[in-house]
Image (cartoon, rainbow, N blue to C red; front, side, top):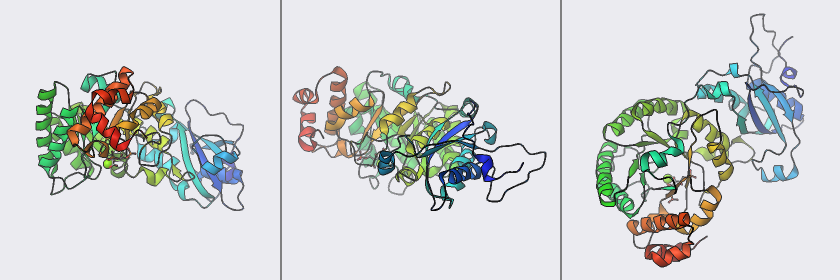
Length: 426
Ligand code: CAP
Ligand code: MG
């Protein structure tokens, strides 16, 4: 017995409940059969290489097995959709291949060298089924969607967030003031933009202190709980220091740009936030470098799965096609984030990007109300300013929850009428 490519293909194999099963969409290179390409994927992502090996007696077989090859339906290949409807291979990996709790190591297997191998013209990791032995080595979210209840004391409506615009360049005082105006207008969360961290025009330490002080004022004025998603993204040690500082000053959340910071940093931050009881808001800037090409890379569905295992509480998952950014399957991803995962907490999905109040009925019909709605331009672009924009958003949400139409709500709330007049309902 040796390790040749044939050793990695067994269409009779039935995965055990300890195997990690990955579904890939692959396009074999010219002249390469589907079977040949599929066995190379399993080989290179587990314990094989280009040369046949003759391991000694001490060898523990950590080989993966391609156990299913399905022809792609023409619809699937044209749209490149993430529907798992064929053209796909499924590969089972033994749980022992994976170091417990080490997400970079998992990805070096299932999304590593294979992404660049010549045997395939393209390859996309579309979905994973995570077995209990792997899942139990990750913490999962500290709160998940219970942030709504535990931080804000609300259970019947989406929570709301806003990101000041312009994205960067506002002074600390201006930034905090925008937050205050949004909070008193009815928004729950002020959020930093993904590229705002600690620049000269708005230093992290000053922004934290000033924003939390105005948060306290907004809570006094409204009688509602308010909070702040401050972006701690940096090298890992700096992030840990910032997490400690947020906790010391009475914050409830930190925001991390999880893709640009990296999974290893996120895992380290997750340990520290647990110590302080802080929630993690995950921004996904750069995700599209992996998931935008429909035939290649790593799907947002898998990125979301990894995010949940590593323990984010809130995660951007798109706007079900309604906003400004290209979307994958927001609703399917959100369902996965809320489904059972061996007792791990769920994740609160965040809809963001090009949203305005008029889109809310369609959005909430698609996603349900156990969610976070984030509006930047859709609040600050209101003709009468941030506070009016926030009032418009909140009234649209409250109306939806009460079963009122948005046009009825606009008759009672002039700020909403102005927003609908400006942006419409599509
Ligand atoms: C939204 C946003 C978010 C994107 C991220 C922006 O602002 O702040 O970063 O929504 O996309 O800068 O575009 P607007 P996603 O509300 O003004 O569009 O949630 O898809 O990861
Ligand atoms: Mg942004």
